[in-house]
Image 1 (cartoon, helix red, strand yellow):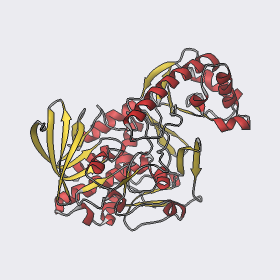
Image 2: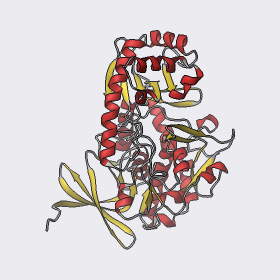
Image 3: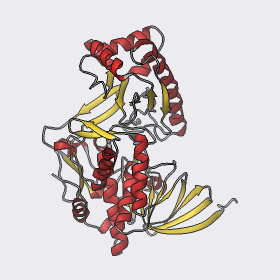
Image 4: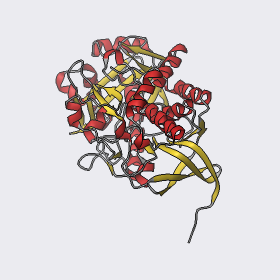
Length: 450
C-alpha cells in the first residue's frame, strides 16, 4: 500500500487556502490582528479572480457612493489610485489595473507580516473532533503537512470544506453558471475606436481615453449597431454565434491601448466542478478569443493593429460549490432586503446569472435598499475552527449570484481573517464568536456600514 511521503510538518496560527479576492484580505486581516497567518496559493500571485482570471473592473455594489465594508479593500483601492492604476466612472472607483493589483496586494501582505506560499497545491485534509487538524500541500518542497488553530477556505470552490465532508451544493438544476476565459487585447487606437463606436452605437463607449464596449445577442432585435456589426462577422464566417452571445470589454488604467474582455463565455458548458468540462471551457474560449481578434482587426476602426496581449491564466468561474452553513442566505432574503444582527457585508448588487435560458438574468432591488450578509454564512455546521469566505459562502443559487462580486467577497475575507485571529487570541472557536464584534472591528478599521 502506498503512503504519502511527508517531508515536514509546519505550524501556523491561521492558514488560508487560496489567496484570491477573499483569501488575500483574510490573510492580511489575520496578520494585522496579530496572528501568525499563512496564505497557501496555487498560482504565483495574489488576487485570484481579480488578477489571475482578469476580472476587472469591480462591479459596483449599488450602495450609496458604492461604499465598502472592508477597510482593507478601501486601502487597496487607495494604493492603486495613488499610483494611477485605478480610476472610475461615476461612483464606481473599481476600474483597476489587474497586473498592478498583484503588486499592491503582495506589498500589503508583506507589510502585515502575512506569510505567502506560492505555487502550492492543497492536496488533502486531516480532521478529528469537529476540527480541521492539518492540510497536506504539494510544492517545490514536496508534500508538507501544515497545522493551524484556524483554517479559512477561500479557494472559491470550497475544496477544503468539501474534502472535509462539509455539506455543499452546486448549481441549479444540474448546471452552474456559464464560465468564461477572459483575455486582454492591446495595440488599440482608442481615439479612432471611440469615434467609430459613436457612429455605430452612440453612447456605448464612455470616452476616448476610457473605451468601453458591450453587446448581448438579444440586442440584435433592438437594432443595436455594434451587435449588428457582430452579426455581419457571423454571416461572413469570421466569428461564430457562440463567440458573440455576450461581449463586454473595459479599459485598463495605466495600460494605453489595452482592453480587458469580459468574454468569451463557453456556451452551454455548465459543469464547473468537472475537470474535463473546465478544460473544454479553456480551450473553447481561447479559440473564440482568436476569432474575436480577427473580427476586430477586420471590421472595427482603431483595431487594425490590435493583438492578443494575454489570456487569463485561470478560467472565470462564477459559481461552483456553496457550503450549507449555519445560515443559508436565500433569494427571499434578497427579495425582502433582509438585515442581520451579525452582518459583515452589505450589497444591492442584482441577482446576476449568466447562462440562464442561454442569456443573462438580472433582478435588482428597490432604489436605496440593500441586503446584508451574516457572519454565520461563513461557518460550516460540521467544524468549529473552519471559516469559508468568498463565492463559496452558504447561500442558495440565486442569492449567491448577487453576493459573488469582489467588494462583497473582500468584506467576507476581512471578516474571516479578523474572526480567525480573534479565535486564536481568545482561545474561542470561530463558531462561538459574536459576529457583531467582527463588524465592530471592521468599522474601527475603516469599513462603512449603512
